Amino acid sequence: MLEESILNALVEAARSARAQAYAPYSKFAVGAAVLDDTGRIHAGCNVENAAYPQGVCAEATALVHMVMAGGRQVRAVAVVGDAPEPVTPCGGCRQKIREFAADDVPVLIADLHIVRARYTLGELLPASFGPSHLNPV
Ligand code: THU
Image 1 (cartoon, helix red, strand yellow):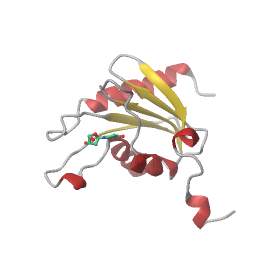
Image 2: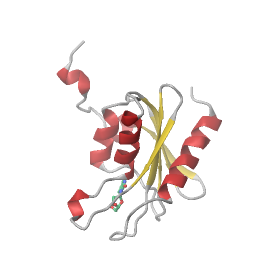
Image 3: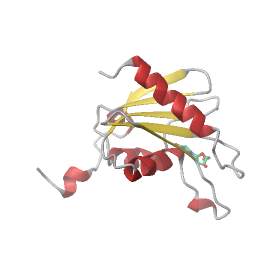
Image 4: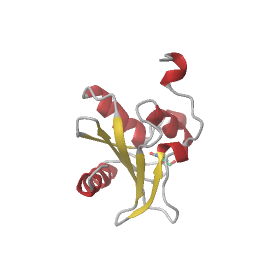
């Protein structure tokens, strides 16, 4: 069970990352953070592009930062957005998270003030395709 203080730090890291968002087209800033199995937090923001499909989501940026730091296991995820509905990860990002996270990994969905929803990755992406399909144990 992850300590509440660690999850709070994860959400705060996602909020700080959101402030770095490069979203001149959608104006929709998103921040994300992942906790790795060594207790480190890696954060990211969305980075849009004039060629729209080339934009990168906040979750993807956070995962890239984790991999660059040597992390390979995600223990928790936080996503921060500011919208009437809680900003949950897009489908592509759910799959990207799945690469490094088990079904029971918590995904906290927060806004600028509070955590608005909490899911497990398995709830967000049930019956998923993952690394074990390619490397059966
Ligand atoms: N976005 C994210 O960064 N993460 C999500 O899970 C949802 C969407 C970004 C992509 C784009 O830059 C903007 O939000 C609007 O879709």
